[in-house]
Image 1 (cartoon, helix red, strand yellow):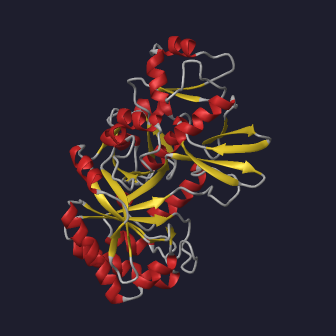
Image 2 (cartoon, rainbow, N blue to C red):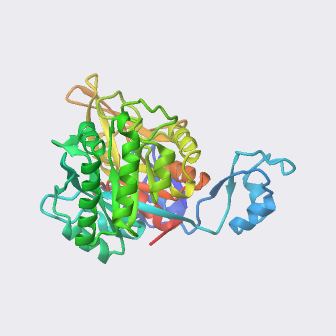
Image 3 (cartoon, rainbow, N blue to C red):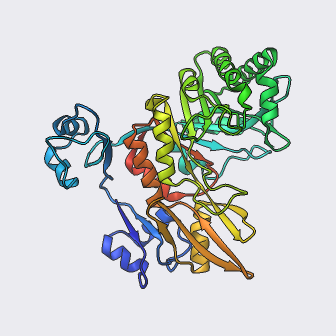
Length: 421
């Protein structure tokens, strides 16, 4: 594979000749609006047969020979990819490049926000081969612990099954269109309501042919931290052999009284759930100042904490398929698909910048005398995140949400990973 960052004067025909890849292939891979749609700083994914390097963190007792055997490569190739590596005393914790013919296996989950009328999510066909699970965000619950359907999910369940994607019932503490900590607290703190909810969810799973449940309870009151774990145990018992997936807020330390993250006890949740999705997104958020949504330096700090409490083989990190556009100085935010953000830069003629420390692209533009700054994702930023996934030996990734176009990501996944089905 190759990445070409557009320079002043580049043309698509020139790039095509350089890499011996057809112009239309480059246009399709990157979702370009036209052959002339280039701006400086735009990162183009050039599909090629070669795989990107694997990443490995050296552990106590490792030798290069053992590492080479694990990845189907040679000591000489590892040394050639890691200049200055001391073979006599491998530095524990250091990340090294591994040229390997073995693709990383991963468990991938895409979130689907169904339309009220049950219309099939756009882009599902494109993403299908890259998804193990689809979490269908169609359910909330009452204060009495009764699960309620908020959107038509049957057509999507059926289509997921046809595409060999396991559909999960996604249950969220949504009230009046927003996450409600008080709703979560009312149910979790009442043993009867809590058990009712577990039973109600299990009934929907059985009746609608779901493969399991994805739980997304946000802003759980810290006082209900233990109650949430009890609920997960009761839910796991109620759904029996079906899959239990739990989403948790990203954090770098455990602050049990924190109103946002305190309700999630990583260690206890990891002991109950089949898979835990750490939401390594929303570093830059609606209502806050302009910032990347998922900077890789922050993401790594979150993962260091996560793997110290949950087995890495049970952890997924999160990949945003969306961008945020801040109007200045109001900081009013417009959310768009990654592809829409990329092509807005092309339309506006903006030069795309790239933060090396955070491994995220961004750009500025003006409209109607209002200045804007946009943080989004591209092939460089997703590779940086996938490298962390590989280095920390995580189970895989989640994607919010599948209806948002990001063709670079799905093509890169098809070319470089073995997605569990």
